[in-house]
Image (cartoon, rainbow over all chains, first blue to last red; front, side, top):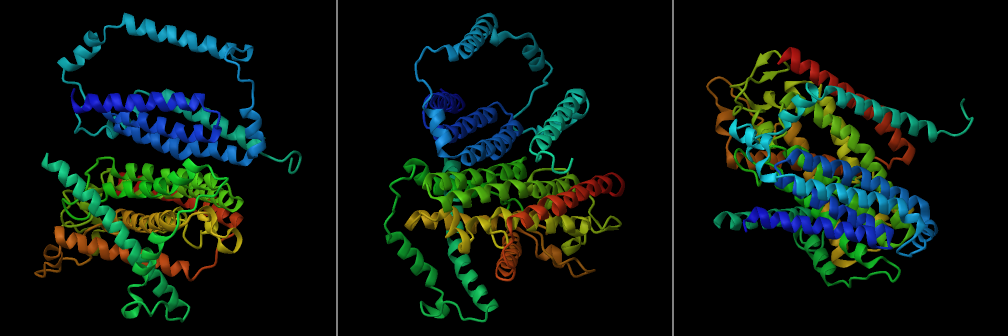
Length: 183
Length: 356
């Protein structure tokens, strides 16, 4: 087994195990801190896939932004609220969990069909890319490529996402406004 | 296998350096504060009190590691390590001289920016794990402050990247001196590619970067929780903020992280704005001052001098200015620094397209 494979299995194991811990533990704050480990392992997997820019973006946005915001919400809500959340009914089969179970089951079905129906070693577009030498090497810089593609080929989705974020921002600003103070 | 051994030696060397710098930094801070407040500072231990910090660290190593009974033990113990490792990881990508960098990443700057944001998580972990109201207040103040000030710092950095057109710290450094492979112009009109020195630094290549540098410097003070932005550990309100409950070696680790952070943000500032490892002396006619003082050894000397000078300014500011209130802090960040940083970014774009 090569070093890359070893690293892949190590990080995959860390990601899966920590994600299981996040889902299973009763201590919500610890589960958030464990989520940090999951995200880091995922960033490691991105690096192995030569997507270094995506890996670092993952750390900046999820660890530096979203995770800290979640923690913020937790710390502002106080221990009593957290304990109340922790003492929800702990039965394994529960009518409240039905939507989640259905969703997870459907997703599993999709994943399994994909794994069985795809022939990952002989995909046509990968063969073609290898043939035309249209591949990313460990030494090549990916940032320019991402920037150029975002501004040309994927401009419309990019702009649509930014409008969506803008809408979310305005909505948040409106919601956090005090009722009837200045209006 | 040899290069693995080199990696380990470099990693240990960087750790040793940050530890030594923290020892020196604490001593310098005491002497600087003493000078500013017209006192003498430490004088008893060693000549001019120079062994004072060694005595302090010896004392700290012997102290008991107290874990509060109601603390979340795992988070409490892990937090100082995460705070320090976040800063220490940043050192991996910093260039020290031409061809001298622990890791030559082509995303170096972005990597450092990402790694530094992990420190917030460690601080929140310390605050929550201690189960102490002062700690949690300090941690939340710290997180709010760091997240807010990442915005102007980020835009100031982007305005440099737009001029430099690369995220590789070694390339950004090389562009600011006589080793540059492209044309360097002082303030957009005078070609100084072969003159180098002071004139080729980023702040003089594009003068609006001087404003970006000031924005970055203010934001970096906030990110390393230094006065006047030290509300996370405001002694008069919060005992010691997020590290109230820490003792002995864990407390030392938090301090080590703070001083390493000071050095790291200053060094990034020097690399981005003040010519990195390039000499400040220009070539004047037959006097090839820049040519004589450029090289690996000189690089380390110059970057260390410049960084220590910036650290000195940080200390000077800490002992001169009073602490900001929370609302003043947020006003400064969102109403002054962020719009100015946006403006710098806009000017950078225009500068790059029309003047370079």
